[in-house]
Length: 243
Image (tube, rainbow, N blue to C red):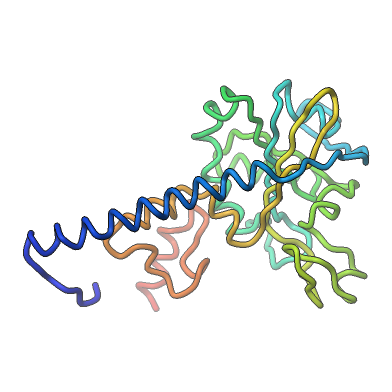
C-alpha cells in the first residue's frame, strides 16, 4: 500500500466538509448532464432491423418487450478482435455485462428493457452466457446493419478509409467497439435517443462507482489493465504469484 498522509480527526473532518461541497457540486452537475441527455432530439429509426432471439426473430420494436424504453448494449463478441476458443467475449464487455442482471427487475418495473446484442450466431452466445451465469436477454444482430449503423462496428472499407467513431473522425477504426444505444417507442415509432462509447459505458459499471469510495480508488495504471472475467481472478492471481 502506498504512503499516505495521516492526521487528526479534526483535520479529517475539516477536509471532509470541504470535499462534501465539491461532491454536491459534482452531483448537481451530473443531474444537469442527465437533463441535457434527455433533451436530445429523438430521431425516428426508419430502417427495419431483425434480430435472432431465444424466442425467434424479432424487430427492433419487438425488443422493447411491451415497454416504452430500450437500452441496447453493443457487446464485442468474436468478430474482429483477439479471441480464443474459451474466451470469445470481450473482457471489458464481460465486465460491463456483469452489472446487468441486478438492476434488471428495477429497469423493467420502470418501463425500461435492457438487452445486449452481438454480431455472432445465437448458438455461439449461449455457452458463454451460461458460463458467465447471466440472465439478461442477449440477441444476435448477425446479418443486420444494426451495430454498424449505430457506431459499434465498421466495415472493411471503413477500417481502411476511416469513419466517424464516437462522434469524431478516426482514420482506422477497429472492427468493433463497446457502446450502448438508447431508444424510445412512441405511437408505434422507434426513436434513437442516445448512444455512448469508450469510457461512456462506465455509467453502466457500478463496480467503478464502488471503487471510487475505496481508500485506493480505482488503483489502476490505465483502465482495463486489471480487468478479468469474473471467473479468472483467482487464476490471474496465481499467475502473478508464480511470476
